[in-house]
Image 1 (cartoon, one colour):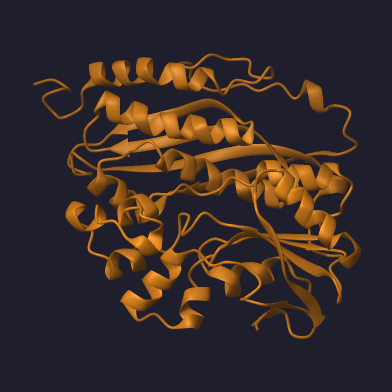
Image 2: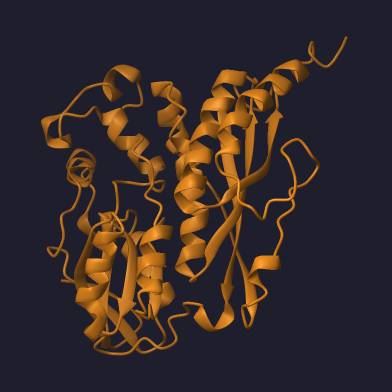
Length: 342
């Protein structure tokens, strides 16, 4: 008896690492001090000494049951982007710049080509956010995961000068809400998605005019947008982002209040931007009430910013310049902390 007979193929692990290296190399930053394959990743903080109060910010998350769609479609090169996005968007939401990322892949069987495809997506997410992929772990766990399934999670570290942190404390009545468009469902609410849509390759491969001629599976696998560049563009222009909310699980009702101080309420005009058609399809096929949709999904807005009214138009313009789509979607009013949909 040996480890391979027990279900763990060490040689496959070595091959997976070799296949990953070309993807990882494209994410490197000058501050990285270690090579892939060591026991830890090292990142120099020398370049940030000029900050008055350099403050580390972090984020950790996974992709969740969106992975089930990837399994059925046998497509594994996009979920890594989701994993990075879920972590670095939280960092950007606090005003921070992502610096590095580490991933964790647990699988029933290590198939090197599949693992490399997953990591290619992670690397792409790191490139989009300018974060270095400095380490990770691939754990082969036979008997714990089915041989053709895996889980994917990650951790990101970033930095911000404390004076530039986005806290929401200065939000006041009259401030304007600027929403940045999502690419669709992103990476939350897929347990409900899987109850509504049949998770079989034949069903997922069916194309729909309402989805722009794309298949359902392709639409559901659309990667989460990474908002790091958009928020950086706004900040570097001199606009003060008073509050920022990453719209993830819990939708509008849970996430937007997280940036609000007591006594402030968000009023949002739901007809002020275009809602991706996948949400209409999901609500109709699943007979899901409007309130539940906004309490579960991003409904077309992946990041919400609160800015001074005088900066609202400029903020939208800057978001658009960054390559994303911005909209003025509402305002802040006095009242019980929460959200009103108009």
